[in-house]
Length: 38
Image (cartoon, rainbow, N blue to C red; front, side, top):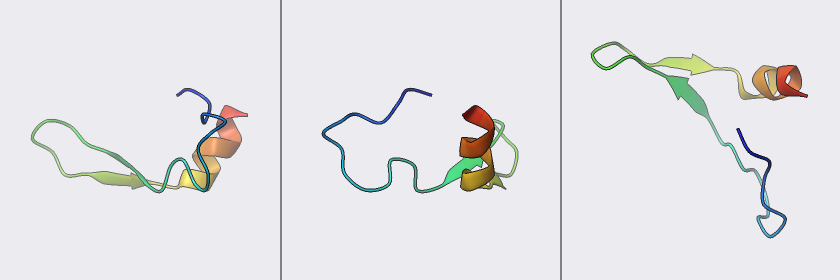
């Protein structure tokens, strides 16, 4: 995951969903993921 470009305004990631090719999508808590990446 790269950092947000300086010219971009607002939220860079609105939502995160992981899914396998034929599986259901699993929503990921955006705030907890961003906190763990810091």
